[in-house]
Length: 401
View (cartoon, rainbow, N blue to C red):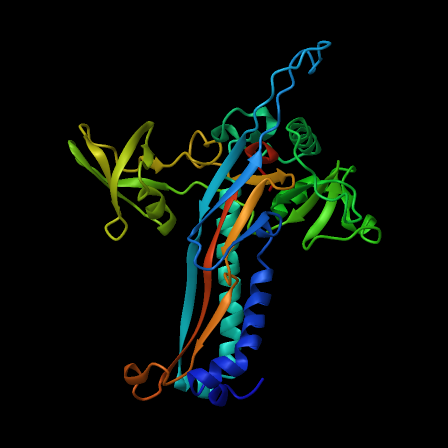
C-alpha cells in the first residue's frame, strides 16, 4: 500500500486512488459475519423508488374432499386467485473513526486500511443481527424436550437428532421449498445454529461431517455438516436469549415506586428502558416506568406499599428456566431451520457496504491545521423480513456445558 500521508492528503486523491482497495478491505471484514443474510430472497429497491418494497406470493388452492371431481356435462365454479403480501422498509447504518495527523505519522500499522477492515466487521455484524432478529421474530416455534414455554427450557434440553427430524417433518408438511435440485446438490433445507448447538449434535453417530461429502457437492460458506436432508451452517452470531436483569434490592421505602439496586448493567438498563418492560422483585412482577443506570434505580409504574427487604432478588424472565434459589435463568439458544424463499433481504440500489474516506484538510475551515482524517462505512439501506412463516422454523433449546 502507498504511504498513508500521501494518499489521504485530500479528498480527491485519498478517496479516488484508494476507494477500490478500502472497499475490498471493508467487504472482506464483513464477509466473516454474513451467514443469516446469504440465504434470503434478494430484492433491491431502484434509485428514487422509495424506502419500501412489497413481496407477493400466490396462495395455494385448497383441495376439497371431492378432489376436484367433475360431474359429466357440468362446468364447475371457477376458483379465485389470491395473493399474500409482505412489506418492509429499509434503514441506514453507518459508523466512522477519526484519525489524527500525529497517529498517521507515527503509527506502525496502516491505520486507514485497518480501520476499513474493523468497520467492515462491525457493519457486517449489524447487517447480520438485523437479518437474524427478523428471522427470529416468526411464530413457527419448536421447543426442545417438548417444553410448552421458553421459560421452561433448561440446559438439559439440548438440540438433538430427534429435534432436527421433527423440524424436517414440520417443514415438509408445510410444503416448504427446499434448496438445491438445480445446482448439482440434492434437495435440502438449511439450518443456522451456534457452535454450542453443533457441539451437542456432533456427539450423535448419525451426524455426517462435511468432510465426508465435500468432494462430491458444492459447499456453502461456513457449512459444517448434514443430517436428514438438512445442511448445517454455523454462525457465532446465532441468537442467544440471556437473562438481562439479575441484581438485588439495595434500598426501598414503603409507599415508594423507586427501588435502589446493587448493580445495573448496560444490558439491564436497555431491557428495562423498553416500552412495556416488566421486572420481577421477589415473587411479584411489576411494570417499569423508568430506569436510571447512574443512580442504580428502577422506578416502577406504581408504588409498593410495603418496604421490600434489602437483598431481595430483582430479575427478568425472558430467558429459560429460573433456579429456585438464585433466580438465575438458563440461556436459550435459537436454531433456525428453513426452506427456500422463507425470508427476504432488501437493500437500496448501491446499498452494499461503502467506505467513505475523508483526508486531512477536506473539512476546510473546520480543520484549519489539517489535523484530522476520517474513515467511515455506511449501508445506504437494508432490512430483512419473513415471507412465509410456515417455511422458517425456530427451535428454542439449551446447550450442554
